[in-house]
Length: 148
Image (tube, rainbow, N blue to C red):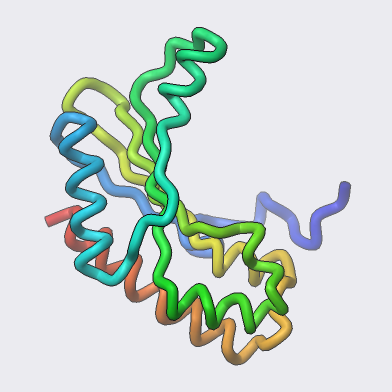
């Protein structure tokens, strides 16, 4: 498979990568991310623990790893229109909380809006640019608050 770009030419800004480290236990970190995201305007239609499932199903021995599937309905609606519905396969916008050691969690996010742009999904480039700007501001605020 040939990609329409060279992955080696990309950096985290190209796909909206954000990271923050929280010095707290895993459950407290999940709650903190949930609260901050909600304050900024995200809801959570999906959340799950891949580590629990994998540990149960295949005895993976994974450390805690949790996914909050964040969504702002107004932005999601705009993004569906701007991509002729194709961005739905990337929904929701995930916030991952991964325990890297006890009482130390890494929160990780990549922008599905920027990924959609890289993949050529938008049918309305101008609206997609506005969506990327709006979601970038929202996610930026989440990570600023997490780092406080």
